[in-house]
Length: 384
Length: 129
Image (cartoon, rainbow over all chains, first blue to last red):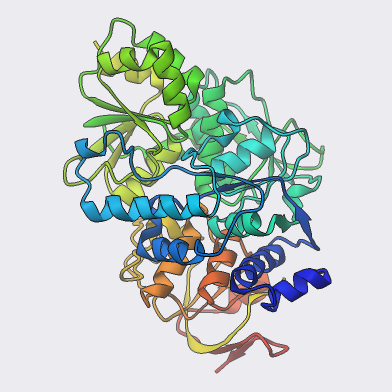
């Protein structure tokens, strides 16, 4: 990778340890992604916020670097472990809460907007077509590249942070015009968001950096988000190109059989003790839709609903939150299903969810069983 | 393709996985043991090995797991991949764990239990012993 004289000097440590670390990360990233140079970015979105995932090592690291590291571009933040408004309703110990608040404090000290959301593409204005950004959250990177006409690598927590500090990111293949060598042909009829989540999960296993995807009908926002979340979970792939692509690309069908394979991998229980909605977090449209679906009905078991704080505030004003709480929903902002410390296998055997991303982490990290159902089935089966 | 992502020099025993690794959620940070039943290294510890695997997969937060296992002294001595993904590259850069990529042919020939010297300053970074 070619560096300017100023960049070389920073890499040698002549602009301080923080800059040296940031450049070391950008260089490793650049080498990994065949970038020939660094380019300016306008927006960074950071992962590595939840104490449940970054642990003491992450907390101490952030505390140390926040003493002198400052972000130099607009920088937003992934969810943390809980919603401070109702954390006392859950069995989290003092240590968890204080470490999580330390992490929040470190990011705020560095100048990061405390958005605690995995759907930055839905709650912030999207910059003009082709803008270079650096998104770490995998579903957000895929959404930005595939639906928002932005350009990003599938950044790691560190490369996004380094990009936020330096204001530059490696010029890698996903930032250029790319031509995927695989086309996945969607063959499943009457898909719902669960189907699209499984399609994304399947595509992520097969694709390298990007895939063509054909045969998709009209998709709503929930289905688009589900597909991005599924893909981000299973592989390194970070972009859908819609259409058949080049005639010479390898064609692979996603049919009932392939879908069943993904379902069998992630669906490990026949029923759940509680329900989670979110991963990715729900936006205002989904909250509005959920409120309508639950009109006159109530959940017969716990249902956790994850959404960004800004969406919660908007939904409160409109009256959705009161309605959802009446129907038995637990409303949680600033956090999400993915790697939540609020679901513990000591209390819960299995969780029902419509999120493929959530299912993967509930199964592998929380160690609980997973029962996959679409939102429609959840409302039909679990409410009265 | 051979690339040097993070430089360094270490000697150790190969632990190879033909499955990719999702560091977030499938590696126990305290012990370095793989906890995903579907993974070919299930119940094996990656601590102090030279870990050979195709690439990292999954959530970007996995980079912190690599930093964490280094802090907990349960990390591999070095990592060798077929393809360097961003999570593994940056995690290794920060944790200062040497990381290189190798060709498909070399990946096929390298086996668990082999003793090697990894030296990124050498023209052939892997020396079989």
